[in-house]
Length: 320
Ligand code: NAD
Ligand code: UDP
Ligand code: UDP
Image (cartoon, rainbow, N blue to C red):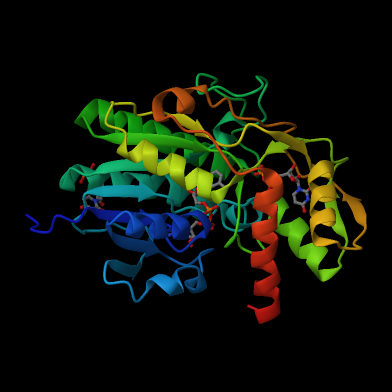
């Protein structure tokens, strides 16, 4: 179907989620018309409530494991629960969302000739034996463990993206997102930043899994969205996969201490059992993003945490 508007029509799957809602907001700022598709498994209406009156924003409740026929120019495929607690709640649905959802969105992109970007993950590297992780590293993933529905689902989605490109010459982009945090994270999704902040604000014990020496590298949401949009819009035929994340690495103990300081909380640190297959360390090698996208993160952990703490403080006050 021909369209007569000059506005670019962007589809964001998972648009009512943490990252998706920030992406919708950015695309509207950039002048796109945005179709947000979400089944509200982990997403929330409050994340996009402020966009509902925008003339270029449209919301559709839909599960991407079912076919979707709409007319669009570009697709950001973010639909998938991202926290271990949520993706392990219904692991079969997680694999279906990653794999069947990717087939449907690729089919849609093929018919509409849209460019399509996949939100992949650092979990494709599993518990890495190479550190930091460059895109050329193939990973160390358990195919049958409790995290596999997500890790292998996302790996298979990458395979589908590259096979659709080889078979149908499709215009694809793949970004591998490393741990990202910020306002609109789900307060009970079990991820470490939201857990620590909510615990500190409520005066509850801060739960460190294992001895707290495992590391992660945390990227603030604004930096991540900037990298993702740059990747979608780069015209140099750089299709990825590309790591997007902040290479500054912290132990979970350091993170807990930073949260305690910034919230001025009296919460105690307590130690809990380390979950199965929990990666020891993780840090993105972002040389490719620097070179091809001229991108690097700008928000330091302290200032990102301050903004996130402010968000959760307000959320807990409203009691939503
Ligand atoms: P999120 O859980 O907040 O958002 C995911 C959204 O997808 C939710 O709104 C959920 O309701 C929706 N969804 C889930 N299954 C769906 C389905 N079958 N059909 C339609 N909608 C569905 O998580 P997030 O942190 O915003 O993550 C977004 C994407 O980025 C995910 O694909 C995730 O794998 C990827 N990612 C995120 C991180 C991170 O640190 N936040 C890291 C790596 C990868
Ligand atoms: N699909 C969709 N929207 C479209 C086109 C296709 O949801 O606009 C789905 C459809 O369910 C199909 C899948 O995408 O099964 C893959 O499409 P493709 O054209 O690759 O495969 P085929 O239709 O030949 O099975
Ligand atoms: N973690 C923790 N306490 C919590 C939640 C998580 O110590 O309350 C640890 C978890 O074991 C992991 C790290 O923090 O080592 C990051 O966990 P998250 O679930 O946020 O992300 P992922 O493991 O997917 O990187």
